[in-house]
Length: 263
Image 1 (tube, rainbow, N blue to C red):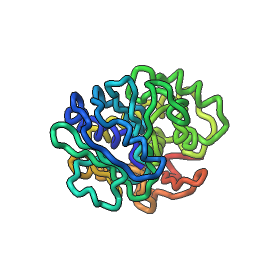
Image 2: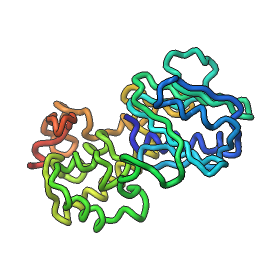
Image 3: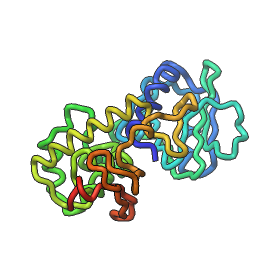
């Protein structure tokens, strides 16, 4: 699933392409998950923003089009409207046709008023690269739950945009076993710093491509070449040399070092 760095990379490329442009034609798959794409014909795009893993397109009628890419969603210029994996498309007044491809159909498109969200988008925590994400807030939120730390991160409540890849990376860098349920203030500070670090680096690298993710230009990210923990089980830990281990935490595959991330 595209996480914050991948979605931010897409946002940065879409912003100059779409802002100031108007939709002249559009269509979508008949599923209710994608039908809202048809509602914006004739509308102009005023902004392209991001919240966590969600893309927020500001429209000139005061609404937002919200897109979650699910597991395999891609936003790309297209010419072949018969592509069987094309779930929605919009043609703009500059002849650009932007397509939303989603092989597994776990993504979703909806239209809403700004800040009138529901579900995860309504309850998620602060942006990790913003000033709103403080050690105090982070530690306080984590203390309110007895769930495992990785599970809390994936819930989006303590901080927005962290998924399986960057949860493993951040916990490894902070020396925290992802299955613990409580953190000291010092540990929360270390994890807070690690989250900001791994996400910043991944954004600079254009995201992580493991299978489906490509940016708007159809290019893969490069951050997969710099992962220190995620997906590296049985390979040597880059800190101590011990083989990394794999476990399952609340149904999510997890890589960790049994020496550097003691339980």
